Image (cartoon, rainbow, N blue to C red; front, side, top):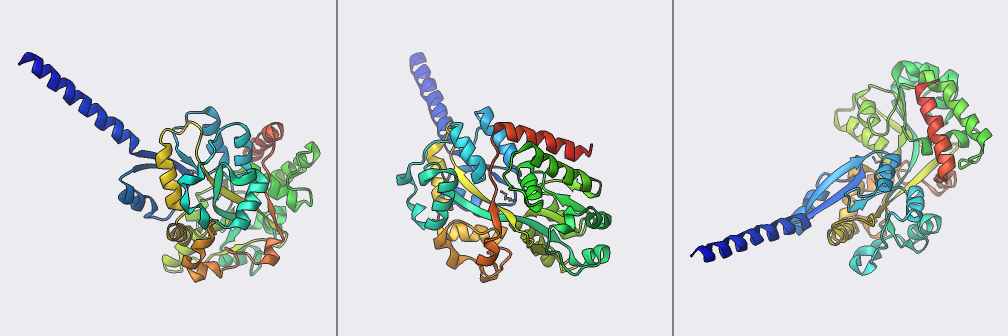
Amino acid sequence: MKKMGKTLLAAALMGTLATAVQADDKVLHVYNWSDYIAPDTVANFEKQTGIKVVYDVFDSNETLEAKLLAGKSGYDVVVPSNNFLAKQIKAGVYQELDRSKLPNWKNLDPALLKAVGDASDPGNKFAFPYMWGSIGIGYNPEKVKAALGVDKIDSWDAVFKPENIAKLKSCGVSFLDAPTEMIPAALHYLGLPSDSTKKEDLKKAEDLFLSIRPSITYFHSSKYISDLANGNICVAVGYSGDLEQSKARAHEAGDKVKLSYTIPKEGAGTFYDMVAIPKDAENVEAAYKFMDYLLQPEVMAAITNAVRFPNGNKAATPFVDKSITSDPAIYPSDEVKAELYAIKAPEKTAQREITRSWTKIKSGK
Ligand code: N2P
């Protein structure tokens, strides 16, 4: 009897252990940008697969990169921008994708795949494009008119000319807290190569930011969405879809605040955010399931409809709201596209220099 009890106890313990292992196996850790998924994307996946998703968010490549380079991030699926992806592939951060586990890969736009592949991941071995967009200016035309006396903003002069931004200061101006995107924007505005890493060029970009620093309300890469919609700030340099979300929120809240998004005429930087699996991911099978789920046209279209960034899934386009596909601020015309530039990620030394400069800019000294 005693023996039997022991056996039963052992069996019971093993059973518990098996359940625990299985439960762990059923948890997927995803790390994505904030405001970058539809409200029911994750819940629908959990319902369909029984896999529980722990979904965390970040709002800058620098934050994601710090976790990835430290190792053991704990994430199974991550979404770096393609310029950072390129560096991280070289650093050995990701595992090669097994396309046989991604039957919906066929829905991706071949032209976009080739372009991002050539730029950062030859042969698209490690990642596929999720969403892309531009970095432009969102603003409140009524407040801008009152402060600056113009009907619309169509040039970077509005924020990079000290005399202009000084006038906008009264209603609030934010910039992205993203040195590797904001320094290229300043370089481009100055007529210098946006990816220049020459010391004297970087110094010019730093001087430009220091000259407008007293008029910048804050640096943040996601807070501006609600601040612009609530009327707490009047101008934000930010991500296209985020600024479009802000505009939509203000509209849904009864149009007390009306907003616009512009890709300034001098051009703007673009980013392509990519879905990848870290080398040390613990739940690779679930990662593939989630990735293939994201590659379904209806799933991807629902995300674009919610977050207002164009996606990399060609088969999804018919399911995207016409009001979105026909909005040139979201899907730019070929003419505007010609003015867009790809943001390159600087190599280590230049990145250190840019980070140092950014700290100086933010502190205003
Ligand atoms: C989503 C911002 C993603 C665009 N909120 C920047 N890669």
